[in-house]
Amino acid sequence: MTDQHDSMYHSRTHFRQTHVEMQQLDDGAFGVVYLAKKKTTDIPQTTDAPNATQNASNVVAVKYYKPNVNQGPDVTPESGLRAEIRIMKQLQQAHQHQGILPLIDSHVAGPIQWLTTPYMAGGCLEDFMMTYPSDITIPFIWHVLYSVTEGLLYMYFGIRSVDPTETTTADPSHMPTVHADFHSANLFVGPACPRHQFSNFPAIVIADFGWSRSYPPGDSSFTFLYTAAQDFCKLGNGFVERLKEMLPASGHEVAQQPGALDSWTRTFEEHNQQGWRELTKPNVLLQIMLKLRAVADQQRRIDTTRMSLEVETALTQVPALRPSGAVEVNYWAARAAERAALYAERKAAERAVDDAERAPPGLGFEQAPLEGDYVLPGLGYHAPN
Image (cartoon, rainbow, N blue to C red):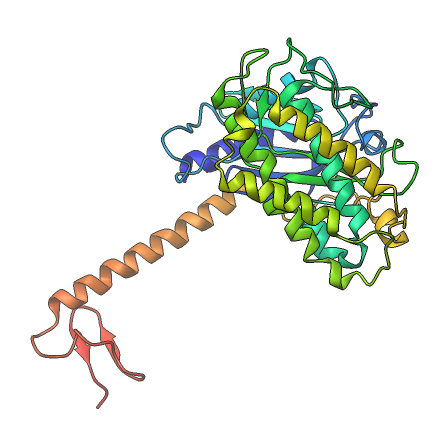
């Protein structure tokens, strides 16, 4: 508990020298995320990022490393955000892909560990689905498949072409990277990219690389392909099925039926049942991903029903830029209050044990007191007269 508080305290103190925390966005097992505003106007611009307009407003999301006793022996306080920062820098070193959440800034020095990314107003895909169920349509599902597959093609094979074909090959200089924690809460939703001229579908970007790992350039080993296949096949079991569950609530008449989606869902399921063996063969995973990307791009354009104005507006807004009252609470006072509560709880437990040991035989301490019963410290259990 102390390590966690000390790391968070030092990280937040360091970050708040140049930023003002606005409100907490997320609190996960490995990190705490806040919305923050830079105190000055010299924030770096990431012009290729889908959320570049919000960089210009000095609004960022900051993630602090939170040590967790349940992380296991392979995760140490020394690793923290280091691996995630390294992966994010590596992914955008040669190319800033629109399907990958960009890293804006970071700092790692001892207990001080934080990173900043653009603020994605749509939140994670899971929350977006629950907030705007009527905007989940078949074309939008294809858009998600297209966006995520494009991002994974870059992560796995270094493919950065805007219009790759089924004959496109992997970049031999690229370091293959697998996500290894792929689910809808790690896909973020932001304003529509300029490329999506046919619709106002939001940008879908891959985020949260805490469990990600990279392999040597050009790696096509079984280990890499097996892990990548697991990631990719979650599109079928996790994303498509979850999104299809939302369709009855949409009420939209669309130009196409879900038959093509069902076909891909069955394809994913077949690979899952086979243990992804087929996908570990050379070029098989690459070819099926290129095919899915092409099909998804075509299908999402069949029906260009625009998302509601409510969604379009929400994805371009940020909360009122006022410091959160909770953020301004004295951190050490909060620590002292927590420790006092733990101390009081421990002392109460110790007194209960002492009372039980001192109770005269046969007075019923083996049973819970009834309503109205009371205990006198040191004298054991007494029933009301």
